[in-house]
Length: 207
Length: 207
Image (cartoon, rainbow over all chains, first blue to last red; front, side, top):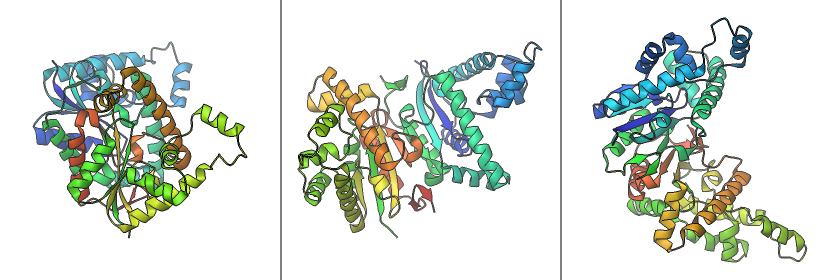
């Protein structure tokens, strides 16, 4: 039997990372988020910046055009190399014990091996833009444009690798709007559920 | 300012009605579900059985073919007649005070007037079929077939009248898988959120 693991899928700017970190702190278990990048980079031998961008987002069309134009130069690295490193790193960390994963399709990667509580954190576009402006001081216009682009590419990446539809409630055990419920309360609900006597779940099916 | 209202959208067989009733009981507020049918029937002058079926589901293709073949006989009643009666009844009940609505697009109908906590209750097909067999003693095969049909027609009805996508997490403040979390726990989480100091929400936007 696998470990009891929380996976947080999240819309860009929704505060899903904060929710994951808060829940992990309350439960006294590790939360893997940025740490994953370094580990996947090490495993794959690729640069961290490259893994950060390409391990969760589909490339832009200009990136693809550029990549194709220089194919054969050794620059184009197969997506599958990052994906297989990502799977290996996530499975090794999950095998160590209960933990929280933020993003990187961990819900899909771990579905056969561990008892998952699958969470999706979302928020309306305007609230996510507000949050990014408040926390990182970016301009409204640039943020909205970037959000649309990020949403589109993250959705495409997720759907390519998991064969599941992004953002559909049925893919998760619980989905919450962080702009209404608040990141602290989202984390408290997750912790409460984690500690509750819920049925063990593999594949998103109750066994 | 409107009332604080809980709207429960639910997949057929997910136990969403039970969740709504439990939450309403705990909060000591009314839960409108089957009562709505009688009121809409009274308001529209149509039979309850007809309102029950047509106020939440798109008709089957054979029903449409049949209806078109006898159009002009006075038998075909415009969908809009049920819809406008439904809107009127739901808005009148909502104006009376805090309450819970189960289904019937109440989330959409009330979005401009009241402070909503919008809930979606779902469960995997197999779990919903199990629940229906357990509670109503129907056969597995018949249930799965009926679920697929009900899902398809409820989704089509909702999307036609609300211009929103059915089952997408972003349309709700919280979505829960009742087969994992359990109807009792779902209700407790809703009650806890309802009592919490959440921001007032109109249009699904936080104001």
